[in-house]
Amino acid sequence: MRCVFFVVCSLWKVGEAVLIGAALYIMAAELSDLTVTAQLFEYTMLRKSVTESFGAAVSSLNAAHLTDGVIRRSKRMMLDTLGVGLLGTSSPVFNVVLQHGKMYQSKENSSVWGRPGTFLPPYYAAFVNGVAVHSMDFDDTWHPATHPSGAVLPALLALAETLHSKPSGLELLLAFNVGLEVQGRLLRFSKQAHNIPKRFHPPAVVGVMGSAAATAKLLGLSPTQSMAAMAIACSSAGAPMANAATQTKPLHLGNAARRGLEASQLALLGLEGNKQILDLESGFGVFYQDYIPQHLAEVTPNGHYRWVLEDQDIAFKRFPAHLGMHWVADAAVNVRTQILTEDPNADLRQIKRITLRVPSSRYIDRPIPDTEHQARHSFQFNCCSALLDGEVTVDSFSSKMMNRKSLRELLHKVHLENPEDNPASFEKMYCEIMVEMARGETHTARCNTFYGHWRKPLSQEHLVRKFKTNASTVLTSGAADGIVQIIENLEKIPDCSVLGSYMQFHKHVTQREQSYYSASV
Image (cartoon, rainbow, N blue to C red; front, side, top):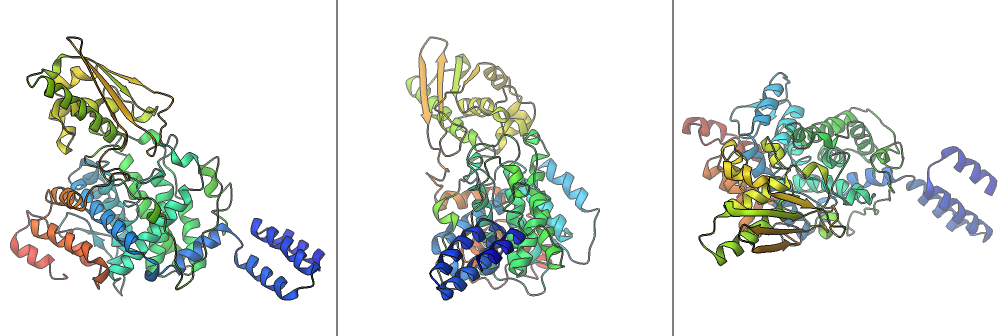
């Protein structure tokens, strides 16, 4: 009996779980306990691979598994994502990809945010809306580092509008959290993922997997189909960090949303991929040199499930720039306050030298940025803007503000230091600033945790204010208020596709046109 079992195991090569099961099987056989032997055999066959555990979880998780804490946090993420996406529809990169999307047509169409009467095939609606979310680097950031929402929510909303049976708000919440969960779990399979990325942009890797899992859930795919969706999506994963601080970086989120949706639709039609895509070094493991995958906990219909979002909150940005810039801005504002408190008439142009002690990260060390995207990824620029203005805002990255003589001169006075105790990690980094004035006095400040970080989250009042400020650049105040109310009561909304209608209530559309577009609401 033992020989036969080992031969079968060697032929199946189904992984560590089976080999462990084989050892237990032999032990049980030695004790002549055939009942235990059969149960162990069945268990190991059900848990063949990490990929299968993910497929089972995606398919089996239901609304009963959502906790109050997870619902509250994910609704905050949704609201913030919709707001920064609406603001992003005014960006040049959004207008470029929208023109590209208009080249394609299909029988099924989904709303383009902030563009009344503009609809695109679902894949391209997910793409352009995903680009809008990340067009100004204003979207949420998680730990380990990624932008989780922008890869998932645009895909889900585009899909929801095309389904014959419209999903409820609770179903949207569940699918959204499934997409977050897959991203969070995959990131925890590598210690490298805990650091500020160097080689590839994480949303292009884990984001497309999250989009595939989320849309698979909304489509009601089986465990096998969910596995296939993730395998297909994995072949669209990856984007180099060399494109950070360029107009191409926002495309990483758009592509993640689009390709994940595409993968789940292909899986629904029967397309297959490697059934061990998450187990193999040549599968998802190609992205991380220290990749150690683990099974997801078994999901039972009425049992408790521990979501990553329960243990790891999200960071919301107060201004549109790389997350690392928020430590710098807070420290710089602190120093500015010290200077003006000591001398209210102080001339900040008389600063002699600025020393920034920050983590070593090449793509956010940009002494003299030339474009708004470079400025959003520049320790130096955000430091100088905060010193001169007392804040960093959306307008800080306009051509007028970037090309100020006072700012350009101040940039040349900034010197970076990279202390060994300051790791390139959003969980552990800090910023210390020392400003030397022309008369010799010095001022220092240090930021360990900025307001908006997961350790110091934005209040609900400030989060809603951020949403309304962003949304009001495009929508009527009534539409913005309506979206806030929908998100607050999302688990009670019978048709989540109503969000698509509200996202098109442009404030420059006439009242008659608004009435037309509100018909579906």
